[in-house]
Image 1 (spheres, rainbow, N blue to C red):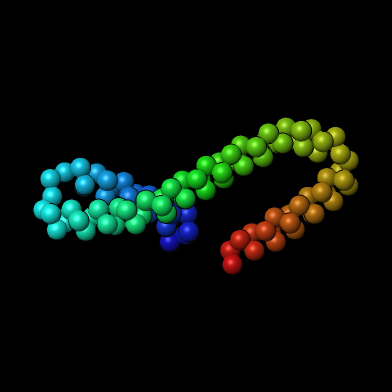
Image 2: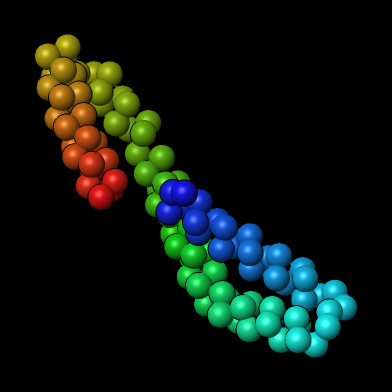
Length: 100
Protein backbone atom coordinates (compact mmCIF):
# COMPACT_ATOMS: atom_id res chain seq x y z
CA UNK A 1 0.00 0.00 0.00
CA UNK A 2 1.37 3.42 -0.96
CA UNK A 3 1.72 6.08 1.75
CA UNK A 4 -1.11 8.13 0.25
CA UNK A 5 -3.35 5.07 0.31
CA UNK A 6 -2.46 4.51 3.98
CA UNK A 7 -3.41 8.10 4.78
CA UNK A 8 -6.69 7.70 2.92
CA UNK A 9 -7.34 4.47 4.85
CA UNK A 10 -6.90 6.37 8.14
CA UNK A 11 -9.40 9.01 7.03
CA UNK A 12 -11.83 6.30 5.92
CA UNK A 13 -11.46 4.45 9.23
CA UNK A 14 -12.04 7.67 11.19
CA UNK A 15 -15.22 8.37 9.20
CA UNK A 16 -16.42 4.79 9.75
CA UNK A 17 -15.83 5.13 13.49
CA UNK A 18 -17.74 8.41 13.53
CA UNK A 19 -20.63 6.75 11.70
CA UNK A 20 -20.58 3.71 14.00
CA UNK A 21 -20.51 5.88 17.12
CA UNK A 22 -23.72 7.57 16.02
CA UNK A 23 -25.57 4.24 16.27
CA UNK A 24 -26.74 2.37 19.35
CA UNK A 25 -23.85 0.26 20.63
CA UNK A 26 -23.15 -1.83 23.71
CA UNK A 27 -21.26 0.24 26.29
CA UNK A 28 -18.03 -1.77 25.96
CA UNK A 29 -17.99 -1.39 22.17
CA UNK A 30 -18.80 2.31 22.44
CA UNK A 31 -15.87 2.88 24.79
CA UNK A 32 -13.49 0.93 22.53
CA UNK A 33 -14.57 2.79 19.38
CA UNK A 34 -14.55 6.15 21.17
CA UNK A 35 -10.97 5.58 22.25
CA UNK A 36 -9.88 4.64 18.72
CA UNK A 37 -11.77 7.64 17.30
CA UNK A 38 -10.05 9.99 19.77
CA UNK A 39 -6.62 8.53 18.98
CA UNK A 40 -7.14 8.93 15.24
CA UNK A 41 -8.59 12.45 15.39
CA UNK A 42 -5.28 14.40 15.64
CA UNK A 43 -3.71 12.20 12.97
CA UNK A 44 -6.65 12.71 10.60
CA UNK A 45 -6.58 16.46 11.24
CA UNK A 46 -2.88 16.55 10.37
CA UNK A 47 -3.42 14.45 7.23
CA UNK A 48 -6.23 16.72 6.05
CA UNK A 49 -4.06 19.80 6.66
CA UNK A 50 -1.21 18.18 4.74
CA UNK A 51 -3.53 17.33 1.84
CA UNK A 52 -4.82 20.91 1.75
CA UNK A 53 -1.24 22.24 1.55
CA UNK A 54 -0.39 19.82 -1.27
CA UNK A 55 -3.53 20.82 -3.21
CA UNK A 56 -2.72 24.51 -2.77
CA UNK A 57 0.86 23.91 -3.93
CA UNK A 58 -0.32 22.01 -7.01
CA UNK A 59 -2.80 24.77 -7.85
CA UNK A 60 -0.06 27.37 -7.51
CA UNK A 61 2.33 25.40 -9.68
CA UNK A 62 -0.35 25.02 -12.36
CA UNK A 63 -0.39 28.80 -12.71
CA UNK A 64 3.20 28.69 -13.96
CA UNK A 65 2.45 26.33 -16.85
CA UNK A 66 1.13 28.93 -19.36
CA UNK A 67 4.11 31.26 -18.85
CA UNK A 68 6.66 28.48 -19.13
CA UNK A 69 4.88 26.96 -22.10
CA UNK A 70 5.10 30.28 -23.94
CA UNK A 71 8.80 30.51 -23.07
CA UNK A 72 9.42 26.93 -24.18
CA UNK A 73 7.54 27.47 -27.45
CA UNK A 74 9.78 30.45 -28.24
CA UNK A 75 13.00 28.42 -27.84
CA UNK A 76 15.06 27.00 -30.67
CA UNK A 77 15.17 23.23 -31.10
CA UNK A 78 18.63 23.11 -29.50
CA UNK A 79 17.43 25.10 -26.49
CA UNK A 80 14.39 22.84 -26.16
CA UNK A 81 16.60 19.74 -26.25
CA UNK A 82 18.85 21.22 -23.57
CA UNK A 83 15.90 22.19 -21.37
CA UNK A 84 14.27 18.78 -21.84
CA UNK A 85 17.49 17.01 -20.88
CA UNK A 86 18.03 19.16 -17.81
CA UNK A 87 14.48 18.87 -16.49
CA UNK A 88 14.17 15.15 -17.22
CA UNK A 89 17.26 14.60 -15.11
CA UNK A 90 15.81 16.65 -12.25
CA UNK A 91 12.47 14.86 -12.47
CA UNK A 92 14.19 11.46 -12.45
CA UNK A 93 16.33 12.45 -9.46
CA UNK A 94 13.30 13.78 -7.58
CA UNK A 95 11.34 10.61 -8.31
CA UNK A 96 14.21 8.43 -7.11
CA UNK A 97 14.54 10.49 -3.93
CA UNK A 98 10.77 10.35 -3.33
CA UNK A 99 10.65 6.55 -3.65
CA UNK A 100 13.19 6.04 -0.87
